[in-house]
Length: 70
Image (cartoon, rainbow, N blue to C red; front, top):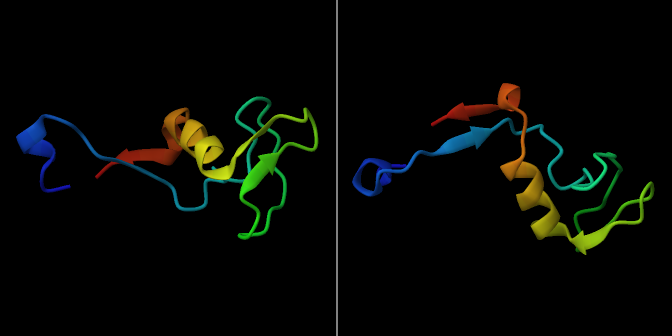
């Protein structure tokens, strides 16, 4: 966070309980997952993606009410 002024960027923090890795980035369905599950496969729309990539898409598109500036 201390480098944000130097690079002219901003740091945003998403609420820790936002289900970014458990939510489908296509349809928004939230499902239970174990930490050992590395591939997200939606039980509703069958969208399949690497768990971390799915979570990054969800974090990028997080609703404003769960995001704050650091």
